[in-house]
Image (cartoon, rainbow over all chains, first blue to last red; front, side, top):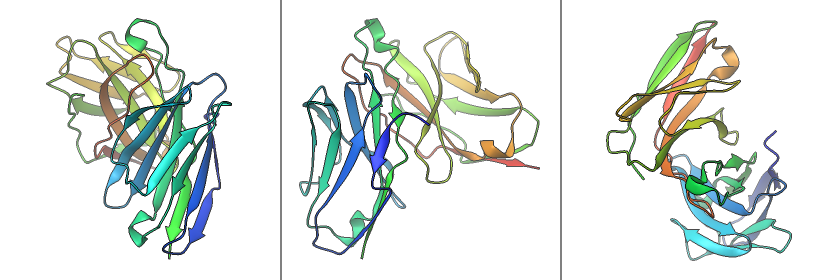
Length: 118
Length: 112
């Protein structure tokens, strides 16, 4: 158990719909990351939040958005869903140490949410 | 972040050591080597990381060559539960964090 929790575990929805995925980071971790894993794309970084602010963006579609709340949990919102959005969505968290080199910036992953768009 | 090269697949007998190689010939001086694994659609699991010294923890050992251009992850006594995709990732560890860039990884199959 990594200490990162994600809900729901499974989500089945239809094209055109909107869903929200939730992530609770490990206690004390300030950074939250979202990754997408589809069969043909592998694990892809989507977006990172650090202490409530967006820090970095990867290959995230404009239909997708995220936020990190004051209690540090994060939500990933996916809208106008398409068949190709079916994937595993993982959240990870890290403490993001301010020590030189950030050697303790190890990301720990949650169990993921499996999204199926029909 | 530096690019890594790993063999697509490897086999290992149960109880034997599994040695997973990774090439990262363009690694920079401030980049760490991280290893993660993913067991069949579960969330990636952190294994170990290092900068230039060899590292060992309860899961594995990491051997980094002196020139830092390659490394080897060693699972000393592989079990069937170690069957997974292993990812070698090279990245700068920044304050406020930084993304992980996953490649194809190595599918390790531990056979009875």
